[in-house]
Image (cartoon, rainbow, N blue to C red; front, side, top):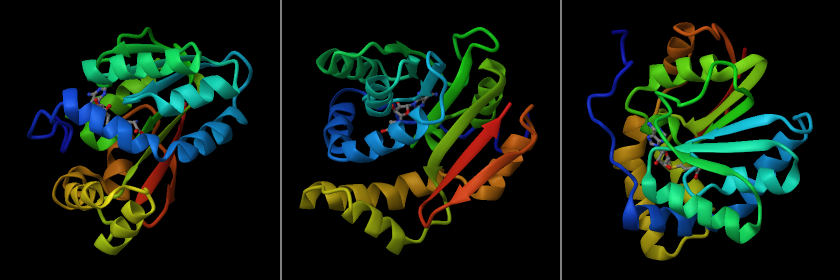
Length: 221
Ligand SMILES: C[S@@+](CC[C@H](N)C(=O)[O-])C[C@H]1O[C@@H](n2cnc3c(N)ncnc32)[C@H](O)[C@@H]1O
C-alpha cells in the first residue's frame, strides 16, 4: 500500500459525551458555518446533489439547506453525531439526509454528487488516501470537492489565536488548545502531503489556498 495511505491507529470515535461537547462548542461558531454555506450556495446550480463528508453535528449542511434548493446528504462514522445532526435538522425544519458510514468506503454509486465538502475532519480519517479516491469516484464529471482542514505546520501562536476567537469558556479553551497541540496537529497534513495524496487519485491536481492555521483544497473532476 502507498506511503501514508493508512494511519497507524484507528482513530478515536467521537461518540456520546465527546460528540455532545463538540456539538455544543461548535454551535458557538454558527456564523462561520453560515458564511461558508452562503459562499458555497452562491456557486451551486439549483437542485444540485451535495454531500457533506463527516458533518458531525451537521451545521454546514443545515445552513446550506436553509439557503438553497440542493439535495443534501451527510455521511458520518459516528452514530451519536448522526443522531445529533438529524435532531438539529428537524429543529431547523430542513431536509438533510444524515447517514452513518465511512468516508473511505462510501455507500454511494459512482458519479452521484455535483459537489462535496469535508470540513475539519480529513485528518481524523484512518484511511485518508482511500477517502480522496472515494471523493473522485462519487463526484460527477465536472463536479467539485472542497476539503478544509488544519495544516500540520501551523504555529502554536496561530492556533491559540484561532481558539481565542471561538468564544469558549476558560476550561474549554484550555482543553481545546491542548487537544490541538497534542492530538490534532499531529494528525493533520501539510500542503505537500495533500499534494502527494491527490497525485495518487484521478484528480491529479488541485487548487490549494493557505491560511495561518488551515488549508482549503479544491478538487475538480
Ligand atoms: C472534528 S469533527 C468535524 C465535524 C464537522 N465537519 C465540523 O466542521 O464541525 C470530525 C468528524 O469526522 C467524523 N469522522 C471521523 N472519521 C470518519 C470516517 N472515516 N468517515 C466519516 N466520518 C468520520 C467524526 O465522527 C466527526 O463527526
